[in-house]
Image (cartoon, rainbow, N blue to C red; front, side, top):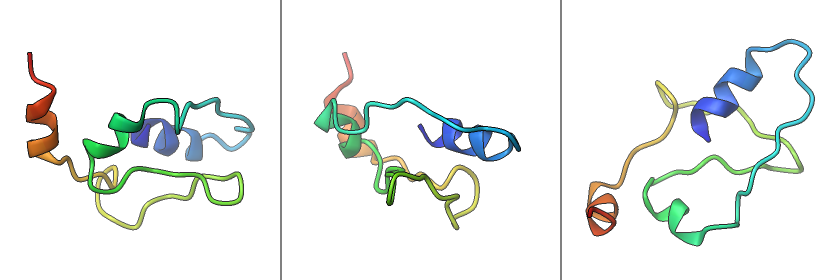
Length: 64
C-alpha cells in the first residue's frame, strides 16, 4: 500500500485508488505505521523511504 501511495502521488492527473484498508485486520499488524486515508485522501509520509517500519515479530507469526 505504501508503494502504491507514493506512485499515485507522483502522477499529476491521478484521481482514484481502490483499496481494501480494513478488509484484513492482520495486515495492519505487520507494520508499525500503515498508510491510512484521512478525509478520503492518502498523504505522503514524512518518514524517509516509503514511511513504513516493518514489525519483524508480527511477520514471524505468519511465517510458514
